[in-house]
Length: 252
Length: 310
Ligand SMILES: Nc1ncnc2c1ncn2[C@@H]1O[C@H](COP(=O)(O)OP(=O)(O)OP(=O)(O)O)[C@@H](O)[C@H]1O
Ligand SMILES: [Mg+2]
Image (tube, rainbow over all chains, first blue to last red; front, side):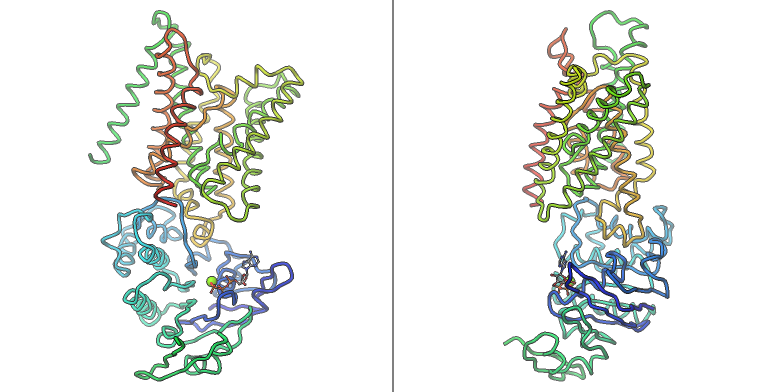
């Protein structure tokens, strides 16, 4: 269970996340949407204790992230950052293996190794497993980091723009994979998405942010409407229904 | 070549260098000379080389930059300053106490370096070592001023250029601490590699990032201080050895740390031998040889790396 109470982050005086109180649904796929600078990454970073809150609190399974020890949280919650640049030169398999660190502390069991190979297979990385991170493409690197997060095998997955750098095939594949994590393994997935149509087709719940506040939340039927989306993004949107899913047109 | 064969070959090369180091020198080879001077010198070279290379790689993981090492981050200069201060204030303190004071100064200097780095908003790969070199220069200037005032210029000079010609039994044993710390680094290798993935990834994986960084910097400070007080500053070694190993096997320390330590020891022995053989029967200090050879290698790696990583 992920819950926040008046969660706030200020720089100088300006609040970039402004007293956000949310209860995210368990074992469901939540998409966070909003314009650049709306505060999505900051919100996720505070919930995943990567950034301290200026005020308010965040809880994972009832544990206050500000006071719970890091390794306890690492077994309950995994986080993918928006840009995961690394200077260390490690192989894809090594990176994914580090996802097991919270459980194995560096001593990999057969079970750990199986999970690592599974995660590599899930993200179609097996042929690249022994390459160094600086020897693969941006999209492949993104998938390697997602594989690490999956290998962490936590109940909660927080992903900041998991579709970054992915082509259409891998973007759709990623969404299907996250959906399966929810449906087949009962995970709670929270992902920041810029592609509203993916959010509409795959999410159970959408949280819309603007200027550090949550201005709307609910299932896609409620959020993916011209009036809500225009309030979120400030441009005209046309919503059509295709095969039972709402699809948004805003290209010109 | 399989990796086991590579490790064996590297081990053999190291052994050959160490043997050569024990045989080369002015005067006949007697048991007494061997025990009092040649073996201590060779051991000191091995210990300092391995320790400095490991300190270099830890520094690079913490600063998230491939081009920093104790001599380009203010660490070595701070150690000299600390050593100078304790020499002035407590000239009769035992060498271990002096070394600990130097280590504390080295730690403070390194933290200052990281602090300054944090304050620089947009930093490129190259500004990081430049900041370190400038900071080191300032600290060194302060040390020079102090040494001048207290008439200790000669002592300061002996810490600034690494030289093993005066290593004798009874005068180098502090360096064993470098081996102990290398072993500590190996035990904590996974934690250090994860820290090298960046703060966010490390915290996300449940690591106590501050503690791991603190441990790494403590190791760096102690190794630097131990080498500075016994044999002086040796530039570039902590840069060259980790970068070469990284190109070949990457940065997973569980795998690379033994190679980093071995290569550091080997390069140190090789440079010292070169300095003893070329001007025979005279000697060029290893710090000078390393300054030229290591500096050249560093430039080469810099150009090569930068072309690739941008
Ligand atoms: N260090 C900082 N100092 C001041 N303001 C900052 C700082 N970091 C971020 N901000 C501001 O905080 C706001 C929220 O940033 P955040 O990264 O959370 O946005 P986001 O919704 O994730 O945007 P994007 O879609 O572009 O990723 C932005 O307006 C940004 O300019
Ligand atoms: Mg963002």
